[in-house]
Picture 1 (cartoon, helix red, strand yellow):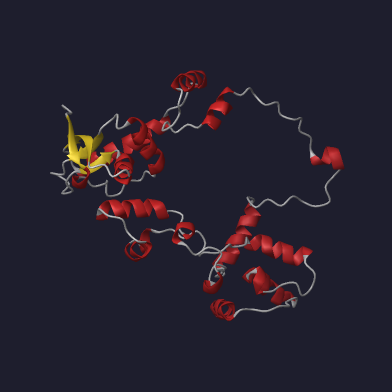
Picture 2 (picture 1 turned 120 degrees about the vertical axis):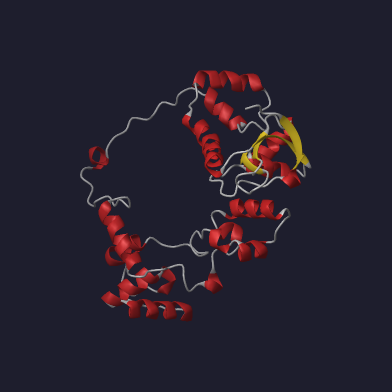
Length: 288
């Protein structure tokens, strides 16, 4: 296969329709600004897939070039069916992950590079690489210093803890609901963990910048909500704190639904409950 490099308009290209990689577009854009493009994108002509000029390797370089308002970019073109296109995408993303570094040689190259702008490394990385090993302080157990601790250490990773947490969720607990008027964070950038990935892909497909409302309207099913726009207390921890460490009448809806429900079972509730929380709680009780 002869791979000839050609320069094509960015407007003629489309990102791979389900690229699994999530790259750092900002860092790549910095690299393009500093030293330009030094390897071409791999583009599928689309004769067999029906998706013309689809990028198989270099999707995030393409997105970075768009943020810099480039008009054209260098590519090599292949023409392969869907199965082989998917294989190229997987290999391009995965094979580099399987490698490792020779730390001594990496330190040499970092030292030779001089200016690290656009390399993905920072001066802090350089300092860490050249710093000597830090002597760890001698470790002693709590028992050797203080005798046997009076309480068992709670492990949120333990099986019993996770089972208790799952039981709360299976019972219908959704602590993030019913707080529309008092969200901790309501901007989409903070609320959706994959906001910028979805936004970049949507704008690349549309060929223009999109408003937040447009993205929310057209890409809602792709967005992953972190927690409904509010902080959610671990229900197993809330139950332990209420049952063992709180005084009577300290529980209210302000401490979450676990506190409210557990306190009502122990007749230890004291406080106020918002109307939205009351409605949500009644629906939970009905389902049980």
